[in-house]
Image 1 (cartoon, rainbow, N blue to C red):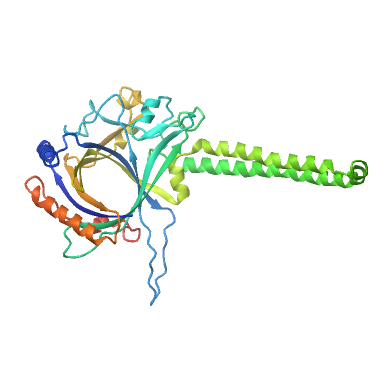
Image 2: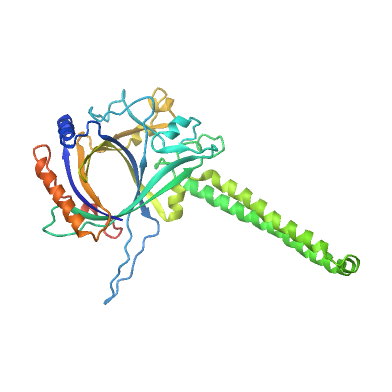
Length: 381
């Protein structure tokens, strides 16, 4: 949990080079850090609807969750944000690699913050799950103050082993029916339950036979050897069979291990997605990000021709700008580890105020509207 202090702005594409050169002189960073993030916006699939009663205050809130990871560009092309981007440019489309393609090329899997599993069983990718509260209200606020809850995990994606073309497609394409994966998972669960029932049935019979045979042979074994050897052999066979059936069921269910299935089991459904490409500067404790936002070009990806680029590159999809005016978004923020640390919060707010005055000739930093940053389920309809 962190307390994020932020100010935002925007610049036209014509002012990008001037802004980058000025920030290089201010921060002393000649080569800024590259930003290439992919985000999923998820919503709880079971929305809580409380009953409002007089005299009772409801404190339960549900929030949209953002899942962020990195993405890499295909080898066929490079996206230069310093150049203007046009959505109708068919000769130079913006292509990005699919996050989870069943490709044997380990170089593509290693790039972009993910790596191939050593046993060839899947691709490991770092995800950041984030839930943010509405910023603090107040007339005397010098910057936006928002509480953010984050959790980082490493998910291993395992592709489908069958050779059909539909199953080999990217599982992270949101326009594809996620219900297919859910149905496959339910079918696997039903098959596992049936196999477990079948596996348990003969074991019970063996136990009954073993006990009946033991009762008939108890007198003979005790009188001859003084030990019941048949009971020991029967119990060992009963213990080994469930372990073998458990291994077979887990191997079948792991074939369809997609991050969307993980989110569904967690209780969330994906409602939107977007890509970010830009650069990042560091000035004291302030992080300055300049980026453009891209979304999936559904018209192009659904109407792929035989001579198009995506037809030849099966592991890439085409993107387009969310804002066709090529405007850059700017965000300057400071993360304070503890929300109760008033001294660091005040110091971060003063640093943002100084930066706001220092770069006022480049761009104007402003406080974002807190209502647009409200991710509560009840407030967004």
